[in-house]
Amino acid sequence: MKKDIPNSNTADGSTESAAAVQVIDSLLRDSGQKKISDKQAYIILDALAGAEDPSLVARFPAVLAICARNGIELNTQDLFSRYWESSPKRQNLEKLILISFWLLKNEKIQGPKNLDKIAASLSGKYTGLFSGEICQLSNGLRVSTRDMQTAIKDYALGQDQAEPSAQNNDQNQSPEIQIYLDRLFSPKQKDLVFKKLRKEPFTKTEREYYSRVVRKKLAAIAHREIIEIATALTQKKTAPRKES
Image 1 (cartoon, rainbow, N blue to C red):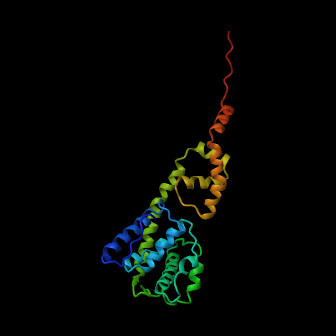
Image 2: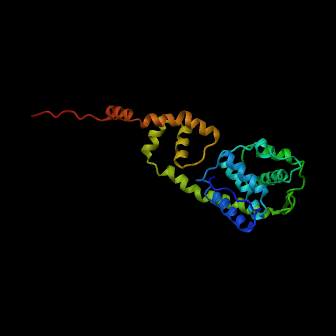
Image 3: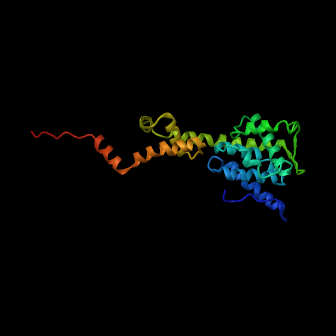
């Protein structure tokens, strides 16, 4: 993201925290259009784990849902390697990862790949973390699990509202276009074409396949000389009229 997540450890911490909340909420509202890279996702998650504003930290599980939508795969090395195991920052990350896994699961919202494996490896370390309404972090911060659930539901509501317009994008295509696309592309390739038109994020596998196969097909179809050849060969020739 071009705009950095502000650090709340400043002389004017409340102002900085409010600005950070606005940045995160903007990302949550427009998650279907705004895309984040793996590196940006780790920067955001790391910043949230170190923030001192509970309302900001409560967005952590919703950001994980955005990671899933962007096809980002969690990696323990990238998440934790910069901190000692005894570091409060690392423990905050671990606790937030673990509780986010359960909250997302309860709301039936997809989490990023490997979230379940990482959560399973941490479950024995933080027993009872999900038993109360407050998540006690290692830096002394107390975050309401209800606020976390609210952030997740707000994210889900935003997705539900965006979904009809995305579906209409397909439905607004003429039947003739649908038939021609079926002749040129496999069902999976056709899905990726519409997904690209809707500006939806690809998974890593989809991105590679689109670049390697689908994009090359589209480039061939759009080539000027190919268009001229196709036009010349498909135009109906009118038979010359016989003079009486």
